[in-house]
Image (cartoon, rainbow, N blue to C red):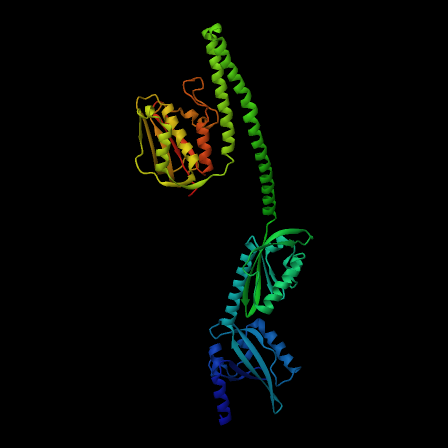
Length: 498
């Protein structure tokens, strides 16, 4: 080997790419070290072998066509590179990038091929392709529309949800300006946002969700929620728009607003009715009661004991009816008045309730206990005072025991009404006559009394109804545990501050 050839071989062996030189017939006449590493053959094994034997059979016609293209171009310049599958000595097939130059010397033609193993690049490309397909699959499964645009507003991607929202196929919008999806003035605002960001780098919409109007393929306008985020892809600034059709939500909000307006009108009419009921219903009752009183005073002696008893019954029923009207009006207001919420010490509240509810002579036959200190709660103090006043009054009123036992406390348990997680439960327990389980629901109905024939027990049958309404206004629940002859335990929650 001449010194020049030796130097050339040394240079060729030092490069990373494989260099293979063939004669016009395709026989290998030079095979550098990198080519040997790529194909697994030694130089001695490769010399004299036809180059096509190193290729996968289906790529050999493509290679011959590739060589023919060299004759129509500048012979001393390489043709465009070609990707082919080649065969390793071990039999494994792998991709390479091949570039061939035709060399002419003394009327002889030789071909110099540059070979680069692109296995890793192909694997990376496939990984990227799989990742992109995975991302596209995810994008097509989300419920929100996802649209990517460039700095000029040109659409680059349009997921399945966006297709459903706007009525366009992705192929119809990709490459077009995103302005086509919105009417004025949002089109001009969009141009202004992009121009401002391009010139100043200051954004006014990135990361901010806002409500705008969109335009469907059929021209219909609809409300949508738009969020925009910036991303940089291969050095290029892109924007991702997240679009949500809020037509149903807006319709629901409009329905709620309409309902609220109707409810406000209804409440106003109810207030007016309450005034009329208070005056027009109670006034005749007072007149009837007064006339019965005058009749008893002026003619009591002449109508006899039975007549007096009947007149007194009339007065009693008039008074009861007036209380029922007052109770009905109060119940109406109870459900509509705003709560005056504050932090309340239940211990102090109950002390005050007991002092006002149990007169001294009654308190002497009542044994009231509070096993442990009660917590502070967030509530409307006057209404919660009324709650405890009603429960304590009932515990005394419906109790014929010589010593009336009343226990007030707090515990943790599962609410049986909705089976929620463990929560704080207050209770008022007594040793009274108890309640039949058939009436556990009825006792909370307005004007419902279990002993309606017994006038010795005073009341209108609204106390527990008020209690239930007050508790519900505090986002709580109430239920009773009772057994006839063994007393009752009223359990309830107050969750306004939870």
